[in-house]
Structure formats: C-alpha cells, structure tokens
Length: 365
Image (tube, rainbow, N blue to C red; front, top):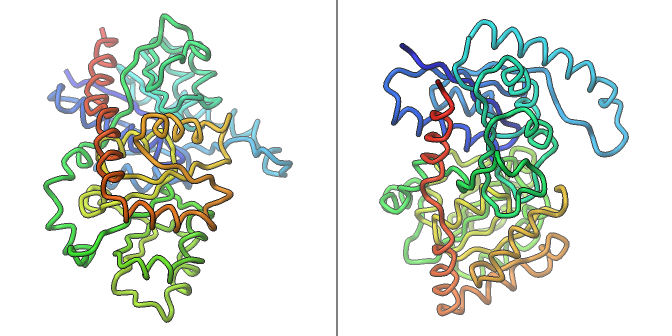
C-alpha cells in the first residue's frame, strides 16, 4: 500500500531545502511513497521543488507586513482562502502524514491535517521560532528542533532534538572540487572566496562586495558571488573595468555543493540552515547576521559560533567598512583559518534528515 505524505513549507531556502532533504530521507526508508508539497504562490518553492522531481500546489498566502501596508488588508482573506484550499487538498490527496518546515504556507495545511486527525510533525530550524510554528505547536504531535531551550516556545513533551536537515548533495561536497573548479573556471592556485547572502540575496553584503570589489581583487583571490535576482544589474555594473576573469557572479547557485567544494573562505548570513551547512562544510567562515529577523536570532546564531572560536562575525551595519579588512586579516593568518575550520566541524550534525524521517514515519499507524 502506497504511503502518502504532504510536506508544506517555503518562502526561503531555509524552509524549502529542509523539506526536500526530509523527503529524500523518507524515500530511502519507504519503497512505495508519494509526496505532495504545498507552498506559497510566487515563492521560490514553486520552482525549486519541481526541479527536484516533486509535485507542488501553491496557496494564496503571505505574512503580515511589519510596517503599515495596504497588503495587510488582504491577509484575513488569504488565510480563509488558504484554509479552504488546504481542506480540499487534504480531502483529495488523503495523506497518511503531514510535515511542516515553516513558512506561511505550512500553517493552513498543517492546521487542517491536525484537526482531521492526520499524524503531523513540524521542524523548526531556528533558535527563535516563527509565528507559524508557534501556532502549529498547539496542534501537531511532534516538534523537531535544532537548538536547546526550545521549551520556552513549545510544549516540552512534543520536542525532539534532531538538528537541522542538510541536503544530501551538500554532505558529499568534498569529492567535487575538480568538477567545481572547471564549472566556476577557478584558478586553483589562488584562494577562493564564496559570498552567499541567502537564497534571495542580501543587500548589505552585496553592497559591501560591490563597493569594495577592487580591494577584494587586490587580495589575489577568486570570487564566487551569489547576488540574488534583485542585485543582478548592480553587480554587472561594478565589474566594469575590473579583471572579471577571477569573478563568478550568479543570481542563484543551484549546485551549492560545488561552490562549497571549491571555496576556501565563506562569507554568509547566519540563518539556521546556513549555519548548519557551514558546520558540515568545515571551511573558515565570516558571518554577517541579518538584523531584519525576529529577536535578532541570526546574531545569536553567529555569536554561538564565535564563542567557540568557530567563525568570525561582522555586524551588518559595519559590513561595508569592515568586511574586506576582516577578510584580508583572515587570509594572512593560516593558523586562524585552521582553528576556525577545526572548531566548526565539531558542531556539525550530519544525520538530522534521517532522524526526522524516522520520527515522522513512527507517527504513521
């Protein structure tokens, strides 16, 4: 008999990639399984999930804007519309299990599934949960977390510590350096700097790179730069007159495992999934936490690594003035690079997706 599972979550890579990782881990344990993903219309999951071979349905849903916005007027109508559609999805698909990985799309789907008595589980990536999972925690059966102390937000009896799911291809990055160097046209005799501001890009990081591009090139490095779509034109403009043979610019890097394989230093935001991946990669990292998150949790994520001498931190407001100096100092200090690499590897959790898959399947009668 075929096992039918709905997985819902999205909006950013931090919600989408764990969802895909969990699905792939379940496929390793269950021979006959059918997945249906549910995301938000016009968000990245509507492209990323089908690219991995899974079917997805979109809901008309988005979050409340923090500042006053006319779009907030539509919010209650979007919630009602999405709950009705979620009921129809559950009725037609008849899932044996529903899994949520965060993002607004997961709220109506997991709520409806839980109310219908379908086994439900959510996975919280961050040290400070979003409003969606806070609400859903009252209804679901299990909550998989990646940080200690989550009983401040969730019922203690439902919490299981698993760590964050890492994409399987990321875990195999180390064998792909030769292929990656050809893909990115990297001069392997020079250090390679990878800049990733999250799946959608990060304006402050992008501006820091663009404004200091000549100084970075003067360091004698290769640069792989993920900008996000919105910064594409600006990144092209800043490379005019620069020896761009050493620069590889991408709006989105699909094969992030290749980028990790060929990099020597990684400059990144400090989202929960980014941190989890960096721990598994084990390369020296400079973290620039986003200030635009609840409870400043990215700063706390980054500081937890800094306290263990496992990463360097540059505050977002100082990125333009301090990032290049921090990078220059790190490149010139081989001992520091080695200790950062050694210490960040100690924090890695590589089997979180398999743990979550086992817990989820254990809920199915």
